[in-house]
Length: 216
Ligand code: AMP
Image (cartoon, rainbow, N blue to C red; front, side, top):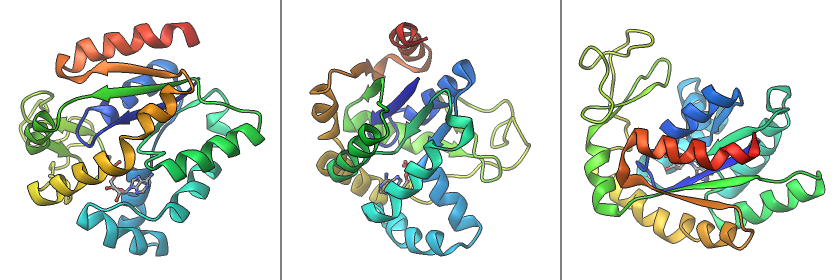
């Protein structure tokens, strides 16, 4: 099962992608996580990506597409994958569509987490992440068992550097301009399932499970 998660920053797509990974045993591929890992490890890619990420801007398409195409053809993706944060622009989607077609592959479903910008700003303020293992939390919607501490590995939780109000607003603007057009792009392929993000974590998850049942 090949899945794409669509939705603005803070719409819950990373959290839901993680659940899909657990339920279906297919890897969660987050391009944002790949870049953050590269920044942490001080790689050349990380150095290039950091300048864009810190401002809430997109990393240029040429840094992203080959990286994802390599990743989805690794052995652990044999039964499928969940892409989170890619494609992010229409040119990325066009390159990706063509590469899949050439390889005789396809995306089965694009899950669109639909949420208004006002809601997204509120949500962003409570987002926390573990800098060590990458687990995500929310101070009110999904708090850790002990405040400020990762349930998985015991590290102190942080706010992502690009989760400050100014950078976040820029990320939303970039989303509206560059990424939102992917929804009609994949609707034209008949593969979009729209999830009402306001419903909250559990009801959204139930809607996603229902939508994915037919691909099991
Ligand atoms: P995310 O964790 O998906 O919110 O991504 C964090 C940041 O990584 C974004 O604001 C971009 O700077 C960069 N990024 C992640 N995925 C992509 C992509 N597909 N294309 C361009 N930039 C990306």
